Image 1 (spheres, one colour):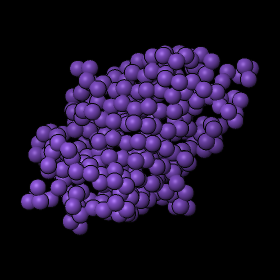
Image 2 (image 1 turned 180 degrees about the horizontal axis):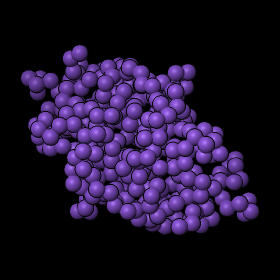
Image 3 (image 1 turned 135 degrees about the horizontal axis):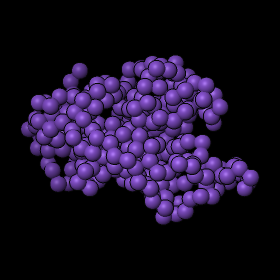
Length: 151
Length: 151
């Protein structure tokens, strides 16, 4: 798969990712490292929590979604460098056995005002589970190179 | 340390975290799992990138900041359940050998309209490195329980 430059992209373009299975071990390992709270660490304690069962840290869901983005359809020349994220939401938790998938849509494209060799795209990323339920949404601004020679 | 209920918190309250040392191995391990791009994975390839050296994935910085939050001064009764994050920015990358610290400030407090036993606080989280330089900022909305008996 060849990587995209700014000129190759259009508002409304959509990209799909592969899928990623989330295991109980994955959820607990991430939580031990980064979000050590009972509802992410321990099945029995999680049953007593507001979640009524073990759930992934929202930051784990974000990290898994990044994996799906980097390995998905929107391969950017020079890599994916995020400038910022807005309206990050987790409308529903991720649970052991869920299979995640990411959909990306290009919302806006603009050349850089100060640097002729690049631009910025604004994308919407939606992560869904195996039932098509939305588990995470956000908007991101991402740096994209212009094709060399077009500058 | 006892955990805070909604009644214990005030707009303007500030909390500090412990510190967290970021190693090259940490950066590469996170990147292998979640953000496999050359500037997060490989020191030599990273030298040729826009970052001029190995840098942590922004999502790794976010995850480490969550660790600092969960283990820091603002311990919430029932745990920290994030409802959403806004304006997540990485003004400067995290590099191997950096030591991170998190500062949290309460920006807004409001009781839930629909549920008498809880409220929502809006916080600003700022992650800095050992030189006091800001590496990450965001606002988050977090669920907080009201003290039982006050309802």
